[in-house]
Length: 392
Image (cartoon, rainbow, N blue to C red):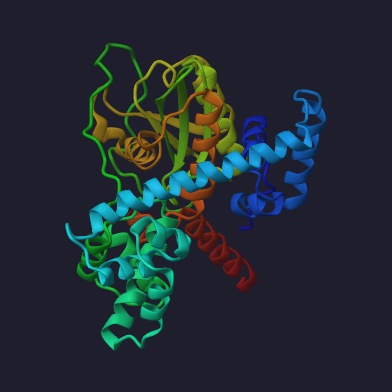
């Protein structure tokens, strides 16, 4: 069965436009990351620019030149601080010149060679003389593996451990064991971000609610058959930002999400509306959540009924009954939120929307999915369905 035409909520459009405006990347690149039509995104951006064209005064040429100069200085200072911090961890207490050359060679794709030589107080010409000498077979293999491991680790936004890196390299045709990947990461000083301990945030109550139709079985036979939802909070300099998500159990894709400054029922309704607009819901589909007041409200149940979806809830205060949704929030906070400081809610919204739509749904390898992405899982399903239809 082919996918129905995609529809986009106003919130999704706003966040897609912000990815273009705030990042300065080409519309075509952002559209490719989000998996939407370039012309569609370009139209949204043009509409946004027309609505905001008089909000800021343009800088003069001299101000722009000075700004570029200051930005360049800041970049160089950040690079120097970052590189010297890294060298302190990787080099011995009294490193030899060869040790420094090896570090420069390993980092030459990340920093300018001349700058690294200057920071480590070695000769640039001496480094190039050393670098031109023929390397041994073992050295060449180690260099190749180091390069691939670093590339995968960087592409994962420093979130992959040895298992995911080994899976990614094996999928690309370069077989690497988990043990070897772990040894290379340790030698290179690459440490994946680690999850924080779970804290219970709900208290058992007496409010009536639907039964638990999922019973901790978060698998499904097709997209849109079983959905799970939850709410979490993000700290910003302006106060809390609340995030509601809807995850498809078949592909583990975040099919819908919404962010707001409140915890009213509209927050989860907006998230479900986005999911329903982007997913073909199966007949008699299930939506599972905890027993929060929003998820047991009459307004929300009317929305589910209108879409032909049955509600399901777990026990209050038992995180395992909604563990798949809890797991996503743990991953989001571990890989993104805990590593950033958000001065404004807008900054948090943009970062979270980009993480969900670009990285989590389309790039991140999921161990539950056999180290594939949610987007790949959905495409494979629809491709198989189309083949069945054509064969019939």
